[in-house]
Length: 89
Image (cartoon, rainbow, N blue to C red):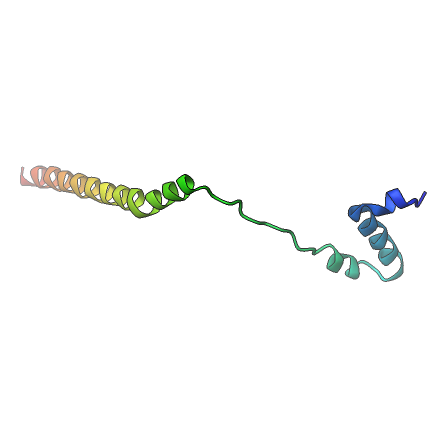
């Protein structure tokens, strides 16, 4: 049942250690062992990808914000004109 092949997997070894700890010490130690670090490395970007992300953050986002602000200013001006025309009658 407990052959070397079965115990060689890190997940299986952790499972058996949790079973033994759960039976002898309780469940508190199991929660500590299950908090293992995971590697979340970012992949390397190519030069065109880097250029694209720089373009988006430096130029495209501010241009969109200026466009949205201008559109909002224009629509509020139109709304003000409609209000003033309606209240003048």
